[in-house]
Amino acid sequence: MSTEAHTEATEATTAPPTGVILTDFAATKVKALIEQEGRDDLRLRIAVQPGGCSGLRYQLFFDERSLDGDVVSDFDGVEVVVDRMSSPYLAGATIDFADRIDAQGFTIDNPNAQNSCACGDSFH
Image (cartoon, rainbow, N blue to C red; front, top):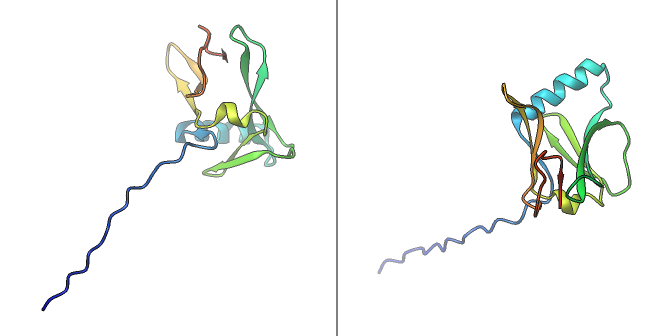
């Protein structure tokens, strides 16, 4: 009599992303910009503020502060910080850097944005 081991495969469910995603190219650009500043205490902070033609706008800036409730993600040595109020609006958003003839700068692809304006700087 032989016995067979039966292994049951379970499907992994993907939870919705909880933080922002920084592409490798954007991380390299952020590192270079921080090095130009000559400081090692800076992190990239992304926040959502009221304003813009669609109701909310993005802010990206270097920051050395730590705020209560910050969500911090590390991307190959680059820390990206999101405050607790902005975090729900930015969950799963991808930050990239465009370096093309028709566009240059950081871009944000946000699955939470219901509407955005033509300039791409604000959303609802």
